[in-house]
Each structure stands twice: as C-alpha cells, then as structure tokens.
Length: 434
Image 1 (spheres, rainbow, N blue to C red):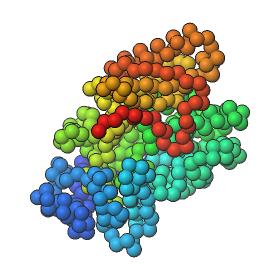
Image 2: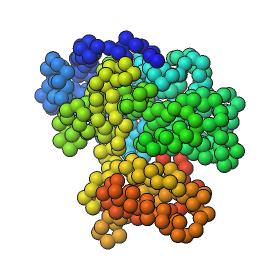
Image 3: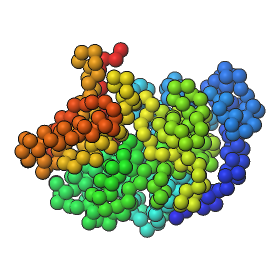
Image 4: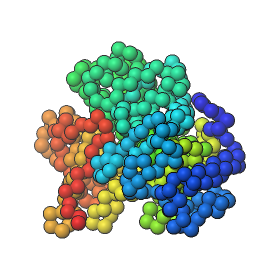
C-alpha cells in the first residue's frame, strides 16, 4: 500500500534532481538565517554557491549533539520564535536537552511522512491506533498521533505507562495497531497474561510499529508470536523530526528513508569520511525541507548500512538496515567492540530464558569483566540445579561465539529485572574509565 506512490516510487534520476534543489535551498537558508551555521560554514571555507552537486555535501561541516546543546535553547532555529508552534526536547539525561522547534509547515511534514509509514504497513482509516509512546516533550507519541490522524484512523492517545489500563483499552476499544517500544510490547504481553489472564494474540491487534531502542530479529519474532501481529521497525530522532524518518515495508528487508525530505549518508565514525553504498558505518542525515530547525549533516551516531536497489515492495527510496547500535554506545571489552544487540541476539536463540536481560560491566583488577544477567523462564526456574547450570553454560558459550569475548552469565528468577514503560536500560557500566 502507498500513501504517495508517485514520490515513494520516484525515478532515481528525478529524486536526485529534487534532492539537489532542496539541498541548495536549505544550505542557502541556514547560511542566511542561522548564525551558528554561517560561522561553521565560514570556518570550513564554504559558501552556499559551492554546492553544485549532491556529492558536494561532503564539504559541509557536520552538526553534532554537542553543537545543539551549545546552541541551547533556540540557537539553531531558522525562523523567528513567533513562527514556532511546537517545541520538543530530548531527555537531557547526559546534559542539557536537545531542543527541536516546529513551524506549522513542519507539523504538516511530520504528519505526511508518518502517514507514509503507517499506510506502508497496511494501516487504513478503519484502524484503531493505540499510541503507547510518551506524549509531551518526547517526540514519539505526537509523531504517531499526527500520522494516524492524517490517514483518518481512530487514535487512542494512551501515552506511556499505566499498563493495566493499556490492556483494558486494547480489549474494550478493539485496538488494531499498537505503537510503543519493543521492550514495552513484551512487557504488555507478560502483564496481560500473568496479571489479567488475557492472551493479547486473541484480541484484534494486527500490526505493531516499534522503535526508540535497539531490538533484534529474534525479539521481533517473540513479539509477533506473543501478540499474533506483524511487527515493524520505525526509526526517527528528535534532532531530525522525531519518528517518521524511516520505516520498514512489508518486505522487511530494511527501513525505507524518506530521502526526498531527509538526505542520508554513511560515514566512517572515526574519520568522518563518506563510505560507499553497502558498507557499514554511521548514519548522517540532512533535513532538506524542515523549516523551523533544519539540520545539516547531523551525526546520528547510529550504526547501519545504506542500500539503494529497488525494493520488492516497489519503492525506489533508499533503505537502511536495522540499527546495529550507536558508535558512542559500543562496549569496548578487552579490546573487542561489542554492541548490546549482539548479546540480545545470542540470548534469544537459547530456549529456557526470557527476553529480559542486563549487561553489567566492571573492572575489578584492571581487566574488564562482563556479567550478563538473564531471566529464566518459569519452567526452568522450577527445575533442578543441574538443568539450570547446563542452561547457564550454554548461554555463556553462545554469547562468546557471537561477540568473541567470554562473559559471565547469571541466571536470575523471573520478573527480577526491572521493566520499562519507555526505553529499556540494558547496560550498567560500573567501570571507572577516567
């Protein structure tokens, strides 16, 4: 299904023409309207008229989250504050929050790209869309809200949390489409079954759109099995627009980037140099049409791969692979780089454990140690000590084979690892790395 088939299946040559025209316009606009960018461009020795081809984008300076915090709160706005009709922020857990401002046109753009996402996976005006992402300063809830309203669906703005009420709403309202984090989706299934005696797969749910945290193919299968739905991956970030930058199609071979609005690049995270198509690196995004706060070459820190071949669904827009992790969230253990998703992947391939875990990093004697705490299933927890020990060793071997580092696995009782109504906290780093 298509929301705008003409643009979603645009010829590559025409797409490049559109992208170049929009790139020239946005570079000229930020140079004239945003002192931050004028200074950055001048320091790099580049003027708007130097952008003559898409390849020239590599000469533009990057924008980082640090830049955004230094410009706090409104230093990156390209319009007067009187034209900003909505403001969102990141959580600000590691410093000042990142601020994002939206004009009326930006809200319309957000609704448009989210409409593409929803219709692409089969949503229609007949769907009842329950949004269990947080509303408020976080972009997740309202992004889905605007998109669902755009296609004429019925919106249930449940927001995050209040799990019992979420399940009651699903049951009473006949929710057909669920949007939340994948970890919360799993918790909903667990709570429904164990606390309310409800099997979510017996309800009217049929589609789920999950994001805002890393998750694996194995977790997708688990969610689909427990809910009886098709589960899709959504990608977005506050700095660019929120959810709606990219989304999986039914082929589920990557996430289509709406690159007529968000120009994607892959760079080497160490050198910043552009990488060829098909090579893994850090995703960099430039917002081509955002009015209130355009972003030029924003370093997302997300690690993925970009592909441009035509998709089986018929769309010609580029796809990114499932986000592997963040360049600033990679765990370096004894010289080996590990992504948390690799550990999750290994865990979910072993029977007898639940998809709830935490990675605890310590350095007791100048040497990194990794402990992975994994919840046992109820059946295994009530089994004999020998069975549990065999499972523990099997997990340790599987994780070592996957990441190349020996870890200590601790099997813990069911429900002992904290649940999250938002992004799950997977890593606890107790090392003193200063």
